[in-house]
Image 1: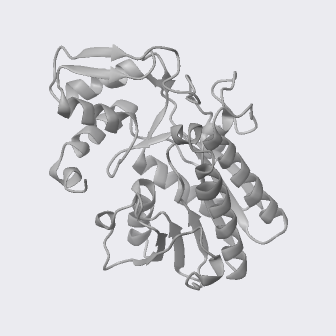
Image 2 (image 1 turned 135 degrees about the vertical axis):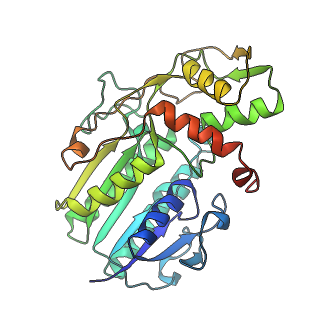
Amino acid sequence: MKKDVIVTGGAGFIGSNIVSTLIERGVNIHIFDNLSTGNKKNLDLNRVNLHKIDLKDDYRKWPKIEASTFYHFAANADVRGGLKNHEVDITENLLVTKNCCDYAIENNILDFVFASSATVYGEPNIFPTKEDCIFSQTSLYGASKISCEAFIQAYSNYDYFKSTIFRFVSWIGKGYSHGVIYDFVEKLLKNENKLEILGDGNQIKSYLDVRDGVKGVLDISALHNKKSCVFNLGHDEVMNVIKLADIVCDEMNLEKVQYEFTGGKRGWIGDSPLVHLDTNRAKDYGWYPRISIEDGIRETVRYLISDESRRFR
């Protein structure tokens, strides 16, 4: 059995946590990353094989690796950016994913694992939202992710590889590098008296600690034996943005912070005011979130204000 695996985006937040756990499991890891948003400091370079690659380039020129599994976690992660840049999600998400699929086929990699997103649901009217609930797309990011899923599923139905697709809520925890908690901490470090909150603060979201997420990805993808399967990974709990801000301020020992709201029920065009996924399909494989959202937020804040985090910036 091949012990090598490939992780795209392996120097990023989620990817590097996947890599750390795979190392613990005795796997030989090849990372494909252009380091545009990932950071070498997230990696133990003595224990991984880092290949600096632009995944938009011809996949036939990438290093040829005999691997058992291809974990595709590289992507444009700026959900809001598609409003102004109509090309980035197509090139960085869809075209890169097609490249990765073709590389896997050419190198006889029989297991393909993909990081999708809850954004594929747009603004559903069913909560918790199940995997078969697909509604109109509200962002180019979501449109690109559902397109990636379709390509991967088509390749699986051609019998090129088994595929496992995970639709994530926002992940938090060690290594966290962008998102609402990051934005709040950065703003409060600059001005501890006020905090700008996008929208009206009543947006309700689910968050998942990276340790729970990694366990779900690695365990479920190894266990299921279907040709192609889609899994939601999220939390049973939800929290509104005002409550999240309260926790961030409390963890930073800041009192009487004045909240300033930009207004509207969405933080930006394409933002979903409610994200809560049904995770029963994942639970059928023995997975469930163990770390509460509040504990995850507090640990994320402690990481972001730590010397370990600050030296990465």
